[in-house]
Image 1 (cartoon, rainbow, N blue to C red):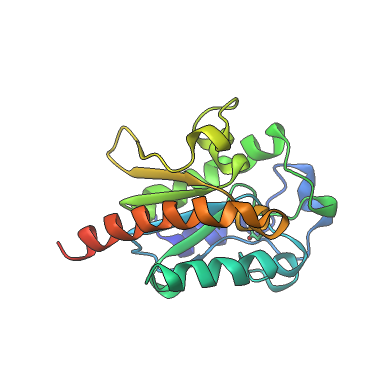
Image 2: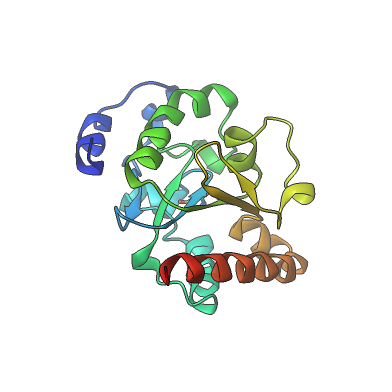
Length: 186
Ligand code: URA
């Protein structure tokens, strides 16, 4: 199935209560053939209004990080654990995430990226292990059964709240950049 077909199917989705509060479904954005995919938590206010992921303050910071790592935003694909904005930007609960995850699995399967970057605890816990700690697991490569390299790191919004996280995130993105360059040059 193509991304366009999946996006068509998701229209009108009512698999969880987040449907009630949304303006737009934030499906995902970027290169459908991306080698690198970034996964965040869920849309905030700006994303809900524009229907695109990471366009608000956290998105601006993510753009800067990608630029510093010499990764073009238009070359990657960006999606979230949940596609509809949780009220007041609260963390999506397990039930909402589980209802939404099949869409993300389809996106990952279709795009077939070589690298997946998990932005923050919500992405890590819903995709890897419910009790995983981002502080412990960030900066280390994991690998999926199908050979996708997975790097958990802090969410850009966490950096806005706590600038001491900038250094570790930059270290993580240097590893991501090196691996990405290797893949792109092969
Ligand atoms: N935070 C996220 O996790 N995702 C977005 O799309 C925007 C902010």
